[in-house]
Length: 361
Length: 268
Image (cartoon, rainbow over all chains, first blue to last red; front, top):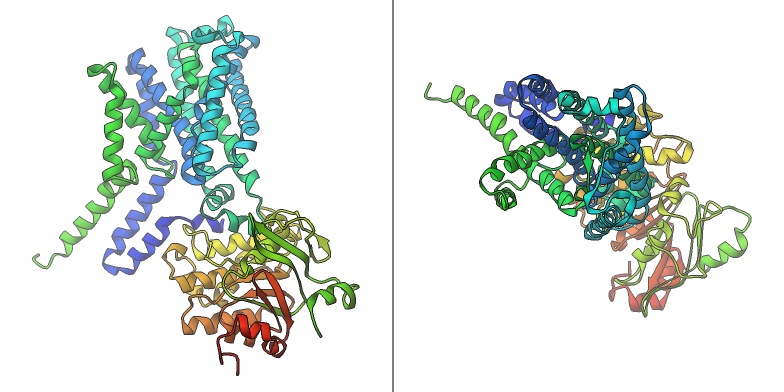
């Protein structure tokens, strides 16, 4: 599609192309950048993740699964906040709705265990998406900071609903009451099956958001962020575009919530706290917004740092995240991914080309 | 020939005007920005809208374009359909195009993509959808870019363009369309503001060339350009349409001379 060329890199490419001495290097770099912004890094990421299934202890598999779940969540939030400038602080609410839906529904289906689990996850996603759609109608009438506050309030409503309605077990939460055969799949001996499901979900999420970003829908969402009034004046209804994005990302968050519910086979209102929504935003900001892999990198940084810091500062590990956030904001306002790209390909390539053309040789 | 309201009421009642608005009032708190303004646009005509700063020109355009709502009592018809309370995007689908005083473009997209988006949006008016007619839309985009001499730079990001070039893109977007889905009513908010001499000539030429088959309403401070381009002119002073007519009729009006034109500036 014609609109697919709508990327900033295009002009960077052209500017560089005018400089003949860099042409061969530019061609290489174009290839690299097309690769890096597509799903191609999955090729390098998936094999180690899959191999880990058999060589990594159970505890670390759990941590990896947590990283993958948060990466899915952060990718969704980045599509909303990075592409559509819809900075939501309520994603944890949809995450928790998905988790609780799964916990309550998993027992109702006693068929082929894997299929019933998958069905449960999809239904959890649908339910969370439904709630997102309902919440989006009023929330999306606001913009900017107001949207942030409204989504924060919606998230808190979910938290208190889960906390105070007896069905949801108060602050103790509830166990995932899956059928005995499904429990077997999720039990310790079967934690590999669960982990593989998470890896597959992550792969699908990457493909999904890659397609969304390239699609006309993704372009419209971005356009609604840069010039909303203009988009409406061209004949596009802006609210349905935003609502579709909000609903879709809510559904993905619900699906991720179902994965999280399976991780410990237990859910509690902690899942809906706004801290979690805030942490997701930190991931997006740290990694680099409006980039397919930015949120994934951010999730890896935060979860990885948590693992490291909890060892030394079990109670105050968030301080480390805070310091990192400040450092990134000061020195890498476009996120770590941006830095990584420049460092790895551009700088090195330019330096190499200069060496080759040096008059001293 | 006197005021536009009379056209709307009597002579042209049987003919469907591309755009007709009556009794538009807009208050902001106690301040009345527009007081019962009526305006009607005719096919193949450029209608100039002039007036001193703060006269309510942009407010009027916002009401017509659907970016703002008039007070009760005002009515707007687009090609015979009452659109007073319809959203901007619905009016756009009825064939209304507009440009903005400060260029509002999709800055992180290329010029070509901006135009494609504009033309695709317009194609909805003719039953187009999000995927149909890609080839025609691309051709139309190329035509539109050639018209403002930006065809060679079609893949340039809009954020890298100068102010004047952005204004030209705005203009191109207001007029662009495939053969069967062009805008029929175009509202231009100061299309020449801040343009260099060469760009002014170019923009003027674009507006003149695109007048056929359309009704154009143009706010402009550059009086030379207005008098050169516009077939009819409405003068808005302090929220009221004081006079409407040809260049000579407008210049003859003492209120216009007193309130708007600098001493001697109009004696040409």
